[in-house]
Length: 177
Image 1 (cartoon, rainbow, N blue to C red):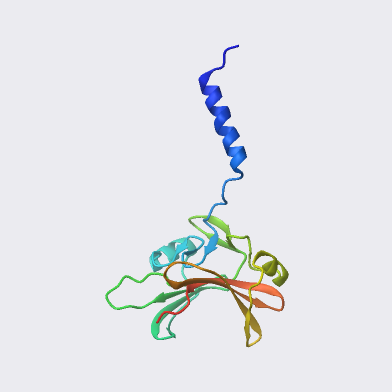
Image 2 (cartoon, rainbow, N blue to C red):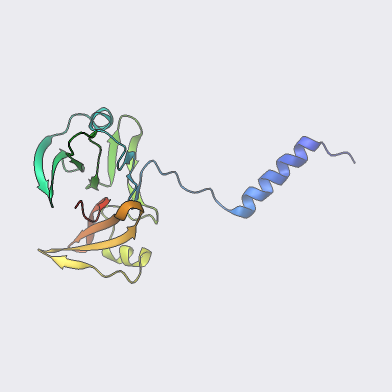
């Protein structure tokens, strides 16, 4: 019996892939501590990129965030970004908050925003506790923040819970100062 070498190689590759398990989920809509909120990469994405992907913001305002001045841009009740205003530097996103489960992007289509463990806006606090056990929340002014992960450059991933449901996913530095 003669075995074609190409078919043998293909069978080995398929077998290895099956043994390793499923490929990791794409990250175009992942919210990752200290790194990204979907296509928005902290420290990299510029205001012009945001406008290209999500259209003109519905609101834009210069605000004080801790000890810095920043531009807060809002796209309805879907997305809010904070862009620090440092003199002599290109303005890039420093913090992003996702308020909707799905956000439409002209670059990536409909993005179902989620953490790497699969938590999404609208999920229950019970699901949050199943995915991220032993996390203690900080409650104030009628809502609770849960810190879920820490990334590079003091980056943090946290969520806000109101009335037992996740209302937003937020990524950025713990402090700007």
